Amino acid sequence: VKSNLSVGRIQNNEKLFNNIQKIQAGGVIDLHLDLIAGLPYEDYASFAKTFNDVLSLKPKELQLGFLKLLHGTKMKEDAIKYNYKWQAIAPYEIIENTFLSSNDIKEIHYAEDAFEYYYNSGFMPNAMELIIDNETNPFHFFNALGHTTYKHLSLELAFKNIDDFMKDKLYYQLFHEKVIFDYLNYSIHFLTYSFLILFYHKFFYTYLHQLNHVPYPYKDYLLLFYEYLKYFGLFQFSY
Image (cartoon, rainbow, N blue to C red; front, side, top):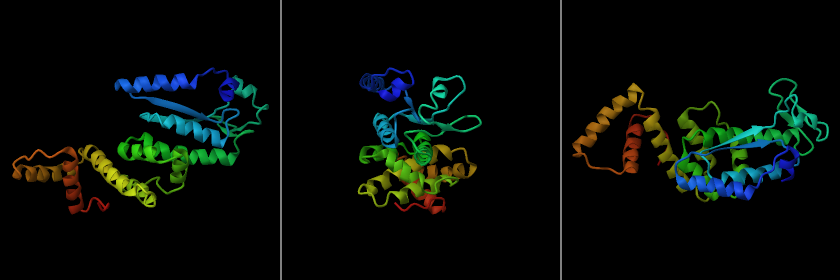
């Protein structure tokens, strides 16, 4: 509350969350929510809590932004009051203030980068939902994940990176199944435009035709496709 008031906002979080849940219940609108790091009176722990609270709503996307101290704004006028330091050139993003050290900002960036890559990208929705349901502190989870080497990896290796990261979790086996399902589900749409995969599909559909068009459930179809990719050496996960 104090943080919102410091930037001239009056916000009833309970009412806001209830309204968001009502919108979600309609099943019509995809929710894209936003959080800003670096507001006055919000330290590292309270920002993590805010992140976890908002993520519990399971929006389609949750954008994490960092406060920009733009010329002519109230925050720029109050910068001395809260000991703000910011970038000297655009976008004038916060470096630190009274409540967040430069290292705190750096750690939030780690969480933001991993969250953007693995959650907001939307390529593993089932695995992400399982994480949210099982992690007591999702912010801490994404911060730790952000310290792994997931950037600039191929799609498959990015999946394998998080699968390896999860191996010590009590719910790893269920996660492993979910992440394979997500990979296959995403790949089947993403790779459909590849001539090579279309070539494999030709033989795959021929195989299904030989089975007299047995109506496989979608998950079973993906597992069959998984075996097909493994045969051609295009998939390294072990199921």
